[in-house]
Image (cartoon, rainbow, N blue to C red; front, side):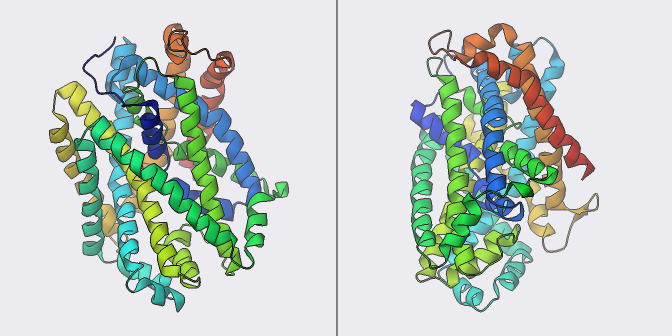
Length: 445
């Protein structure tokens, strides 16, 4: 079943940086802090960490095992490992999901480029005077400008993915992931040294378990799953490039730990500053592009810290985006015989084209199924394709691969995994049920 000609990660560290980069995205820097804010602070964080440990790690390891066992893309993996062609639909759902997510993800990621530039021009004085909301509204309603930044971002993704696994994706992530962590530490030091920052730290670290409602539990479950890039074929594809001698369980643990650490640290960079400067912590999605510029504008050295934050956001978005593009590219390479450069350019252009309506939708059009186009794409990927993909990936790994799964997870006995029986039970029963809950409530919403 081996594929001697298949590209591989240059080192275990390179894989961990790339896989962590895939998992660490806008959801960590943008979504996790505002979900924490609107769901009661530390109580949400506590539940989130438990769910990541038991559910996130389980599905992550399942996807990596499927990928390395097959050494194929998301569709080809199921074709190699099962004689039933219906399982290939799970892979197709993953490729479609990656295609759809990147179409609107590239739009939002383009905003980070715009805001980095604006940090040095007109953003700070406007935000200081209370005009950050109008500034953001004026920008996103200008479809031409939004599309330009989207295209710039996607061209950068195409260049890196076209460069290959070792010289493209791995090299970029080895630079960006340490850079992301360094910027985050700088922002944390500035935030926690502001007068009044201790109130934000207390909000973030002192749980109030009276706020643990079913809604909060569901939000934590959904964020943990989506944050780790699960259910969309990314980890199956990345797993297919892992050397057979590498410890799969420890690799999955490191990736999950890094993803969770970055999300947790992002809260430390945001909440002390938000409380110190008297801003509402539950500001919702606008926290990143509306609230935070106003916070930075009130700081000493605000221009520098604002620019650093949007570089951080760009790094997080970029390392995730290249993994999404790789999911699609890998299929065309493996199954249709396209070369990497050809597949990267063609699929990058196609994904960018699908993203244009999302770039335009924030200006008032178009509308699909009663939702703005970007919202509709998000609903299709987040509420339908990802949970379904996660459910069937866990079931496939836990039941269909039972005869070869332990050999894959332990590298044929080279790296014993003492918790294998517990993990297998989680993959077979607990993880599918948890993701079915996400799917059910996502649909009825």
